[in-house]
Image (cartoon, rainbow, N blue to C red; front, top):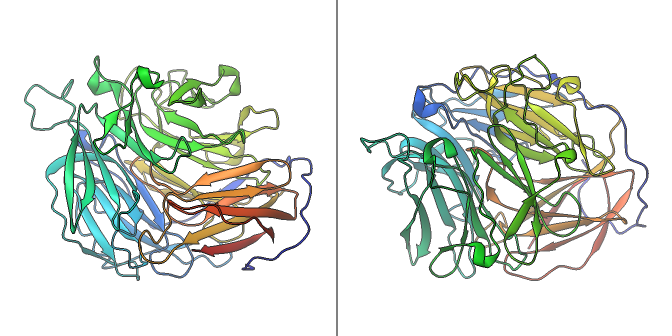
Length: 497
């Protein structure tokens, strides 16, 4: 792939590409996320380059099985091989998130567990070693991280599910969550209470002020009555946003969080997976208020669309990405029954919602070939083979991990943008990237968290349709905007502060 920034003439947006998305299954080393009721949830997937070869690798949680590290060996076709002696010799894992916690330029791994969590230092060869963090014995199911202004280490948020030690549980026995903030050479741990059985967390600069607040999506199945969705204002002493701030109270069986500016108005929509309706919400007003988009948008994905099971659907991981590179972000939702909940669909295919020119979405999971009926959990839309098309990986409960290569024929142009900076926060978490195609601006925040129990660290993929050049700029964390630079498309670009 071509690299670098080249100043050329800015193109004009052309009509969108109309080819149907197409994916083909890829043979991948066998791995299953398994376990009893403590692993009904979880099953996260971490995607990042763990050996420095510019190809994204995989770490999949195992539950009662051990996690697996899969090295990307794609060369034309998508392919992976198991890493032996990775250092993830443990059970009870629910998820994993990559970040460079020690600022050495190599990505480390936060591993969530039923039991004490673990943070592993990346050695740069897809093997890992324990770092000196001490965690309590909890049931961790959510994580996010950010770098606050003036800090050399990241702020970490851990979401815990049901308190297993509560004899009156599991219902109405949600555990508290924890915020780890840098305090000199160590961390100060703050209880985030009340906790309502968190299944996803995401630090995001929703107001574009330069400060990330913490959104928490909670599982109504266990908080039952008194709980709700939450967002913490990251003041000196964190506080929950309330209706007085403009926060709209709402409850759902929250599983995953995804954020993306879908309508190019400069403000991110938030997509929350759940049992029944998946909730795509847009920001309203000047405060942290969000409201549901109209049902006609086509994003509720509330019942299976093939298979004949008419009961409500269960959503887990949501991933945004432009799978046909037409300049509009699509959405993948991993679906599957918790275990055998009788009121919910058992034949529950994954969704691939294709964004249309009129702002609505159309289901394409079946025609694309990704409508698996396994119990999907964690997932990722990532270009594994470097051909500019987003591929797909899904962790399943009690079924093998699945991987599909994107072979869509009629696709538009694309741009892949990597960001880094020297010193602290080497992955530039909190940066905003903007790509201007001459018609509208695609804005993307670099975050750690969200999804369901796993996330992606690496290049940001932009589909740009028929244009041949775009303008690009970046706002670095806690800094100002760079100048606009024009660049040809269909290439990797690396920006370093």
